[in-house]
Image (tube, one colour):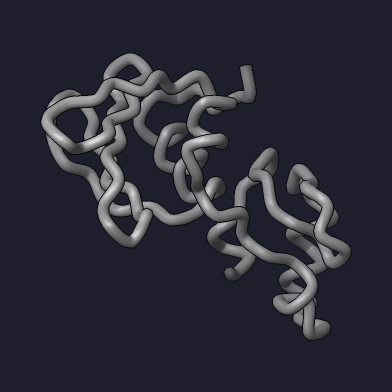
Length: 114
């Protein structure tokens, strides 16, 4: 994970395994480069996180799809999610901050915990 992958408000693990919300200090700390990459970790995207963000499970043919408005995510065998928006494929995401960033870029709204 690099500083340029993060936005203020992204959720990540800190050095002691607690979930924190990224702020300007966190990003500055990353950019200094004091071996910080090992101290902060990405949060793997799971069904639990999708439910927290307000996605709803919608089983369809053997593929589990989560929907939140125009957004849909389908899980593959490696537990990576492919993101669709307005019926088109966007990209694969593995981490909470990636989904937060993509959601914001496409909708202009923060993906908040419900």
